[in-house]
Image 1 (cartoon, protein in one colour):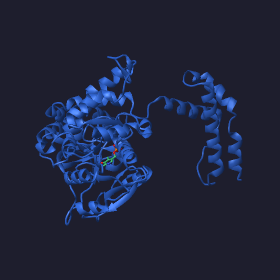
Image 2: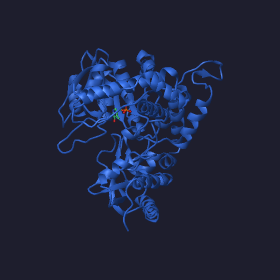
Image 3: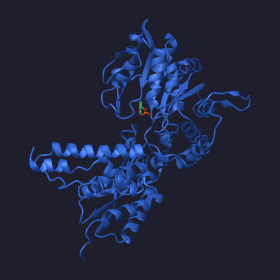
Image 4: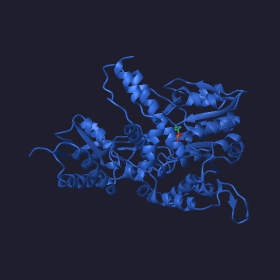
Length: 477
Ligand SMILES: *Cc1c(COP(=O)(O)O)cnc(C)c1O
């Protein structure tokens, strides 16, 4: 080891010294003695490793004293006090952005979470009878009214719903599925792997582009437990294609006495065609085919909290509810409260289209998006942010969240360029401001897509840009 490193290692302070300094800075108001001590040890150990592993050329601190370490410990502890899961502005134009938390909740849903979470609740208590109740009863009636299903059950997310149904109906038995529907949704959800974990035996039929009803029929045998239909929600096979629709699959299942399941994924409860969008199968339509069970997400097109909703025949739902896996996958009271409030909007579908944010973003007329874009552009110009060039451009938004993959939704974006900062650097800087702004980058400018930005969020954008640009050198006039 070279001399410089030896000296550095020797200069590392004793933990007691560091703690003494931290005590003077009133560190115990922020964390316990144990946490302060352990954090100090970690910081010193990390510095020791850095010194030992650094190359001799590397520029590390010349001396490391107790003050230096104490400051590092204090910063780490202060950082722990600020929440890392935080609000951001989604200016990407991807409406159901899984990385950005999918559906923002309606005010009514947030209010219900607050009310239910503030105190105790009747989560599993039947107030009429004064005895133990069922947590799913609160929303069952609502889901069944909206979808026309006989019964419903809710779990943690749609992946869990699919797993639970497969395990209940096809454990150790064959589940027949088309080769054109062995999809990956992202985040490790792949139909073949989910089937394997559920202990169902995958029985593939047909080909990638063409699967006929007769392919399913031929595969049915003594080992068949289930026919599975998967909505190819995030891609489409186009060209020379054929698939069996769920109406004929439901009829086939009924004829053969085999349950049929449809994993709808995005779980649309509204007829999107009315708003000029492509047809997306609704849960009501799926249920109307007479299919046994349908699964869908709570936080995709539905616009509610993360949840997996299972609807279908009472007899089948009875089996699903009794599966011990159901207990492991059950949802919490906050999700139930938010889901209940979200579903209430669907009693009047046209109201849901304007009050639930993902649906509003999806169906909002281009003229309204444009108005909002002009408003933001005006505000940015008037804010006299240094060397900022602001423009309005036509572009396209996307539904995201594995729904409506072919839909290019017309939108208006605000393009922002800064002479002093490349688009890449500005994009990165906007991710680090107090309320981070997530944007698209196109060549030399950043684009703010107004389809996913509300007027309430303009102040965050203005403040964010101000924070980014104030760090830069003042622009010479
Ligand atoms: C999104 C999706 C899933 C997974 O749902 P999560 O709510 O993300 O768990 C499963 N199947 C299909 C068809 C989907 O689109």
